[in-house]
Image (cartoon, rainbow, N blue to C red):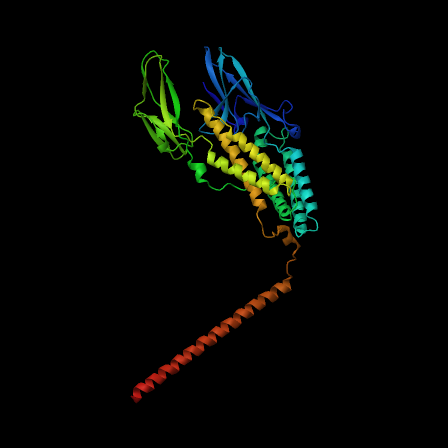
Length: 449
């Protein structure tokens, strides 16, 4: 019996109960956040003792070090194919026995109220600094839009807070909340651009960093030494068995990366976007024995040293350019250079396994985030033409024309079209007359000849 819970359908699972308990174990800035407890009950309705596997899929994007407060005795594993962490355990249950499991996760689906307040104060500070500059009016207009959106965000979070709605609704509502938050950060990014353009230190950056450009180095870098993916097949039966084998490989693997023996075929699944190895006729395993199948692959799970060196250079340059001019940005660039040094010190596990892939993906994601922040600083420091902020609300101030004015405009348009049509007719008519006279002249000329 295998029990599995997915986050999206948590409220519908028969054996699942969700509860919100315990004060959040979060930094002081996030003290108003809560924890969510995912509970599952393993049951043995059979007439004999049996082992019941239990798995709880954790939400995608969860950082196990920061966001998982308590595993409740379960083991944390990584699902390479789906890119999620799984809490797993095996319950040894007697006849009719039940056992409860719980995983405590930080509520990452709520934007801390103090962060929203900080965004509002940051926008106010920038707007004040831009007073009496060429961006003064645009800054005030942006500040009003930001305040309005922050109020909507606060109200939305109150409406979908834990305790007001079911946990699943609370989680689903965060998608729209994130969209509203991005709108706020886009507007704040415009204020920051105005400030830097006027040589004003923004003090901090909350605008949305730009997307990363495609990088050949990032996509094609492969380490010199390959890795070996070890698969084990066990036969607990009392006689030899032919065990089928089909194993999906991490999404980074390309078909040309894989080397294996003649028993296996390497194929690519278009729907899943991943390669897999499959035994042609199954693998023979003797009674009570275990067989290990090795698949050698090109190692794509290594941070590119060339990319790392380039980012360190860019961060250091940004720090030098802004030092003594915009100290907050210089300090931010220095912090990014320090983070890059930490990423460069990452050492993968000795054995290639799911943890190996998980750790690399976390480091790669961190590297992407750092590069986006560097790109954000570089974009801010580029000379820019003066931007004008246009608000759709300005259209509301324009009065619609009266009925008489509308008809006057219609008559003018019709009159203009009539004049054009008349000129076209006269032109055509005159051309036709000239052609007739020319034809008569040719006839008279022929008769005379």
